[in-house]
Image (tube, rainbow, N blue to C red; front, side, top):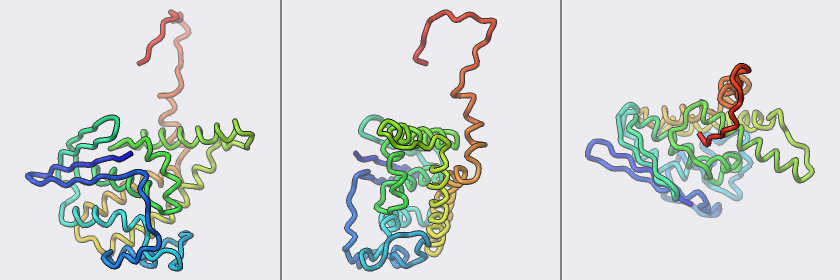
Length: 237
């Protein structure tokens, strides 16, 4: 499965195709990759990789073309953005910050980074330009579905989603180091603001999951009016 992002800015078009199941060659020397993509350059303190088996950060290598292409463009530049998947197409006229955030999130979640790999199930049902509520809803639903399968197979499910909080706390450590990694080479604010926006989404899970869930609770629980009888009719929407 692949997802294509097409940015139309004034008379310029920038496109990226992201293979969600791409392979990463850990043994490659990558002599053409930038210095900031090396594993040891602001390496995350919780990174399980070592230079014995990997010379460059997988997520950084995957993001390098994006960083290069948006290096000189301001974050608030308006663009027409198309996102094409195998099943449907999305379109939005918005700032580069929002579009690049969505693209970066998809690339990072499908990279060979062992920590970011925990987000890959979310990437398989990628929703471009997701809002805060949509991010929380999807992250929680996917996590709980995984726990349901654990329960069905005789395991001990985590219905309180403490594991989801733990995953995002681990991502927070990665976020801080990766921000510094990219900050060292960025001249404009599009890449930095897009990364910061993506990181803020995972931060909300770490620090205020319960608050976020309470905000979307009314969308999920139906409160019937006791004075209004049930007609028995159903609806898909």
